[in-house]
Image 1 (tube, rainbow, N blue to C red):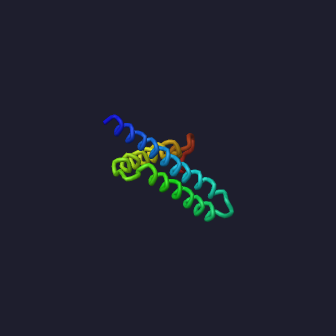
Image 2: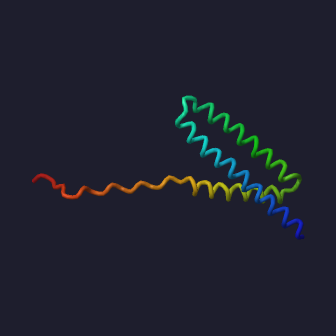
Image 3: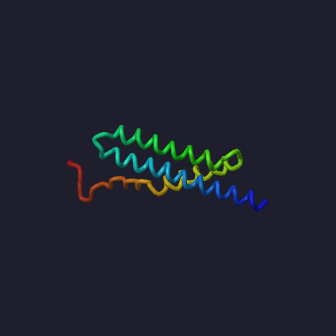
Length: 105
């Protein structure tokens, strides 16, 4: 029982690492592609790398166990939420009306 729990926790942690890599890499790619003269190359290359690493990680973590696959997926979803929170752009304050300006009569 303890061995199964440890295996699921390790799969969850591996899923978190894979999710952080995937979604952190996505954020980094968007930042780089906005300033690049060849954004399609950044996006496509990043997609291949991120998907390749993530899917290979899922394959090795899950093995033949759907429970480990599910635990890994939960880790990825949690990492997505964390990366979204960490990379959030602060909302702009709505403009305040200028002080001392009056309409003409």
